[in-house]
Image 1 (cartoon, rainbow, N blue to C red):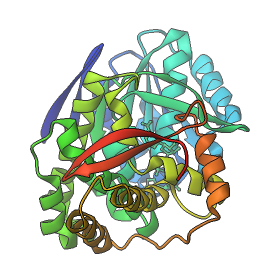
Image 2: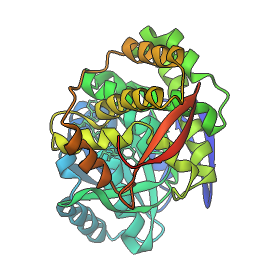
Image 3: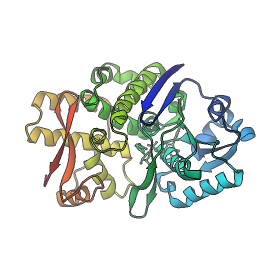
Image 4: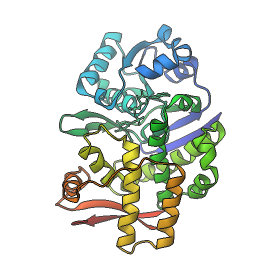
Length: 345
Ligand SMILES: NC(=O)c1ccc[n+]([C@@H]2O[C@H](COP(=O)([O-])OP(=O)(O)OC[C@H]3O[C@@H](n4cnc5c(N)ncnc54)[C@H](O)[C@@H]3O)[C@@H](O)[C@H]2O)c1
């Protein structure tokens, strides 16, 4: 078992690696009642592992898919918390990918003005990204994640065994965020040489070697924590976590969140950021080729180019852009990025 302590303002919490069992999860929920919000698919796949939770807490099964991260389910989770009589000392446990974690997390953030949240991420994306950092949210008819709160978990329990049943598309989604960490590492203040780690271990990663995946997730979490610790509410440094996201979000909007997963769109957004940085003379050709080569090792899906006018309109409408300018995080050197405000691309 590896225990990484994340010291984030205003709270620090452990990230525990190792086999997850119902007993282990409950040992972190030290109130006397809890509500477990579990992704339907995960519950079916891991019934044996998770069903003992039924004896100790109320279970809310959340249907799968981004569209389920909605207000209707948010209200249902809060109703279930009230029916169970959860008190301020009790906990909500989120078991699933980022959608379940974000929605259950938002419910935990507002129920009685905030109760304990235990995150048990079961996708690679949720392990390296959404379960750590305290962002919680619900989607609205006007856009994704427009309503939410910062609410740090009490603990995050990571069991890489869950990742064995992820389909290839979902696994690659997580890898999209993983390569992002490699390209921003120096700006995060990290010294793990994630770029080299990815280069040397790409085959083992794609084979889902548990030891390598554990190391990989641990590095990514430490990098994210280093950023969030210095900028919890995204007023400055945290923006660098958005490498690939400006163009990635535009792809998701253009394809109505149906065709590509978030990580696939982010991977394409990273490629776009490298192209733009090369055009603007921020990086040299060697680094651009190297980055392209590294990304090709992971076989991200090819996403076609969309009409520039429409993409610019999506990017200008992004919640992270303002005053008609588009905010891009662009590479400026090996594993280094900076934020740029750009009028047009
Ligand atoms: N809070 C944050 O900081 C943050 C960061 C990045 C993304 N997000 C959010 O995360 C969400 C995306 O997360 P995601 O990529 O995990 O998607 P997801 O939660 O929708 O899960 C993807 C699919 O994988 C299935 N699944 C989950 N675990 C599985 C397992 N172990 N085996 C087989 N199938 C499994 C799910 O049932 C679902 O069908 C988005 O809503 C995004 O906005 C949040």
